Length: 620
Image 1 (cartoon, rainbow, N blue to C red):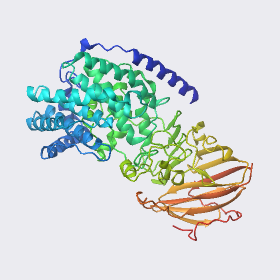
Image 2: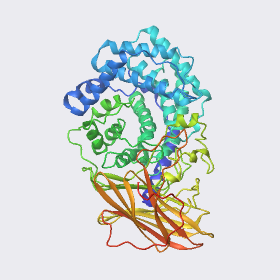
Image 3: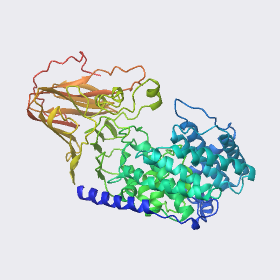
Image 4: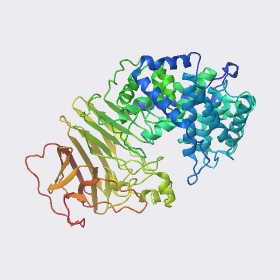
């Protein structure tokens, strides 16, 4: 894995140079519609529902939503806190859907309603440049409508909409900071500006070309998110946002200027669609590390990767999700019809590999025993650091499924606006920052370790230093020493599956200069009962598993009381936190092995009791 990571990182650096030096040939600029669409694409999209049942589902969803929007009033400039992003996203969804509906059905009602929406948005005083994500999405929305409906729009309306794109979108970027950012703002805002400039190029060619050039110089910073192997720092939901706009950007360059500007040569970026397949577990739930939700749905922009690589295994899972009714309501849904129209999706095959491993800022290892059964075994473990964008104190944490049950869970995201309104220092990622006061973000809620109840170190990356991929042995070793610097001399966690797909977590710990209490924590939705000093019984969905500790250190099984939620926190229903507390002497070296299996074992072992003040309950 290390050699592959170095190779991919070198390739990515080469692409950065290519992108920065890329000269776009504006003599090749195509006529309207030029954003996303090439000659023949509209005809192909119209024909697709007749030959693909899944495409018909998507097409019908877009048309039904467009019909609903016809009866609604246009969006209004309403801010929630500092953001207007919900308005921009709704506008993008409406205008994109309506424009698609008009081009594929030629029903003028859809074009008329999109025109009405765009004229209303043109009257906004601004598109909220203080939170430039709002401007990025709104500019893309208006650009798509302007471009796709160019031949329908009256000259007067076209002038009003084009002026709004120029003044409230493009010119607003002159004081924006996203050009230097290496987070999700980069692809969203760059894509929005490039869309606006390409759509209205005829109005001010020199200005638009200069802005596109500035954006293209910035694009490599956003691509850094995928280095070195294609995983995504901030998780499943944000992938659809950040990667969605990266794909929108490159697809527009391809259609309007006949070039991908080197983006499709970025090795790590081109691997990221494959990564997303591994985040969806056999249960259909997402591995929801960082600020991600547990629900999965079809991801339309993955079809660009399938088209680009001619590899339909990248979207086989998405096709299955459509059949299961998990279409979702993505504002980018129409690109499914565009990208899928050139693919043979009659019998897409699932990926052949069952493992994923990647390095970088959020190193990760994922194994699944298969792709077809909901009862397949699934293990995902991560390293990383808490100070990554949207990060949690979850280095060393894992998610585990077996027999159709997710036994070890991750709580995932929390509504940002709710926390900001409550005065939480949500974006203070320092170790003493307010972000870690939120239960879902701190270590108490994650399947990892704590020393003396202290927070994790946030700046140092916990790397994955070894992986196992033998036929009957799968797992990874995470070096957590940086995470617990100052608390222990060394901490290495091995998370693996044995030949029977039992989970085995072994922590090799060299203690610090002072005695410490080590908390081994796991979050679960199962009913839990301590049945021996070293065994916790878990029951869920008619199945039973046993969490069993082996160590020579003084230890005891624990079911922690329910977290005392703050007023602004949403209670996590049906959550139980189980595990063990291990008493560690100064400088002591100890192995703490915990297995999760369906076998209780022939006998329990006797452990010296600790003096724990956790309440009297041992069953929840």
